[in-house]
Length: 197
Image 1: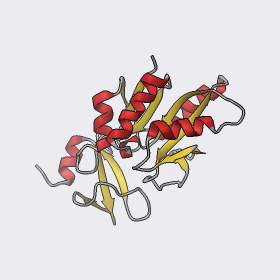
Image 2 (image 1 turned 90 degrees about the horizontal axis):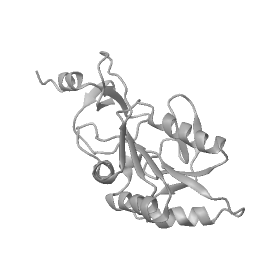
Image 3 (image 1 turned 45 degrees about the horizontal axis):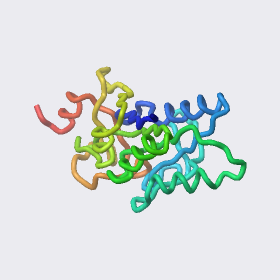
């Protein structure tokens, strides 16, 4: 039986880089993969963008209303040369809906396609994303990708920065870019930025 994997970490923990490395490893062994990401992630448009500068086009974007299992099957079947797909790799998996995470589990268990989902657990207010929560509930395998805070301790929270100031109110989703950036923080530095002593 194939499995659903959730590989998670704070911002800058190398999730996209790890996904691209996994794709490379499969393809180096002449196995074919499909790459996807939720359409809400506008960073890089139709690309997976690693902070190391490595990019790759996704095979398809996932809209909130899409059935992930059906979308995968449509793209798998569109290969004219009959290639078998060894796995599905999903970047920014926190933006999947809980129903799409259930469909990822169905792909793994019922269709025999390993699904490797990469994303963050919580937003800048330390609240779970719905997709991440469902992945934590049902994934066969959970793996934390680690990074460090500016102080050197393990980072586990994502601080949102606007105009050089840490912000703790606002919409859950604001894509990293010109207006907004994020910094990975340990619990102590996160609470200090919130002025909680």
